[in-house]
Image (cartoon, rainbow over all chains, first blue to last red; front, side, top):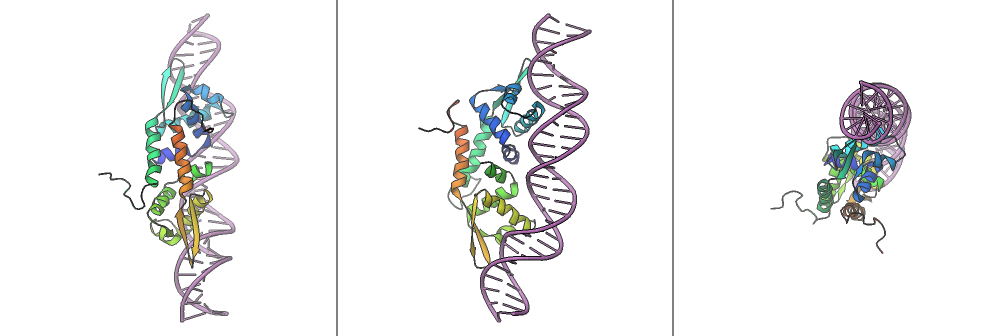
Length: 94
Length: 94
DNA sequence: ACTTTATTTAGATGATTATCTAAATATCTA
DNA sequence: TAGATATTTAGATAATCATCTAAATAAAGT
């Protein structure tokens, strides 16, 4: 969970996620949307990947990135938990 | 939005939010839950307050902190937007 | 094999951040 | 007003982070 929030704390990374919401993109296509260097974008991608917010598959010379909705849903769950009944148990849903 | 995500990127601050979910607490009561110094907790509180995730009212010598659900809901909305239909417009709901 | 294209890795640097101790401020009570 | 309690502000420091350029790796085409 910490890796997820850390990954989401950077505006460039959130924007990458928003781009990937529209469609899967190669690292180069992602980089085109920003004015920072490709190595920096690559670094951001590795942080997002490490947090499992995105996934990558090689396709020829390119590497295609896509969203992993599972982790996004889990994080959304954290916020839903925050809005439950006051004093409600966070974890145990039995 | 950036202040919110930045504020949520620290585990101590997320834990503070979880404590305040249970009930309103004074700065001192919050500090008791952690092994870091009171000035450090005060600093975390000011970041959360600056992000408008929490609010404070003075009550005698103490200052009582509480959650601001509005901003939490807004952030939850960001995640919901992330899970909408692929290609859906992010902002315009007309 | 060599060249081009796509991407990542390495190493460095400046900025931001979490933390600390010491000092300041604010409130209450005697 | 003096002393006690609650909290914040100031200033310092060590760690983390975003970014850069240069070099390395990987795949494809000639």
